[in-house]
Image 1 (cartoon, rainbow, N blue to C red):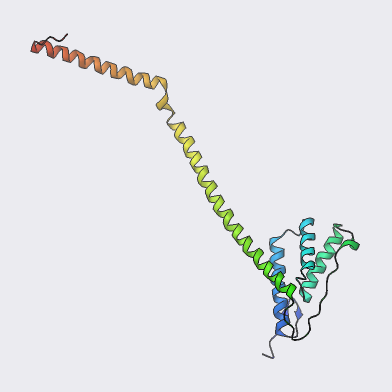
Image 2 (spheres, rainbow, N blue to C red; image 1 turned 90 degrees about the vertical axis):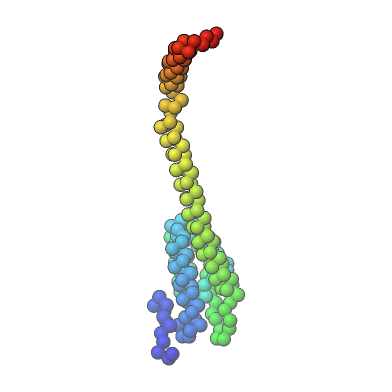
Length: 186
């Protein structure tokens, strides 16, 4: 256990507790970078302010990320430097539990991850439903197009005229038969 290295993104930590905190922060930062558009100035400022207000980051890893956001805010001239909230630096004393703000921030990150995953599933279901309705509409259009001749007036008249000819032929045969049998029906 003495040979174990506690290194995260090039920073070596003195104990496992600090290492675990830094590792969680690195995962949170990776998640934020993967699921947000840091080129969108509004999102950039919102993420920065939220992280500062909740004191989400407590290790060098988190402070470095906050400083990167701070630098981007100044570079993109989103807010004047005097109006940007300063990065709160808190040093953790030995044998103290995780600060309350960090625990709450980690819970919020987990909640956002869950909401994101649920949103992806909901979008997938909606795409399936929309696809089904599109196929249904295409099918209905095809049915109307290919069955249009059923309601064609000329086709209906041809059908009835054929029936009339058949009926007249039957009537003529019946009359012949009546003559043969000597039946007179008036």
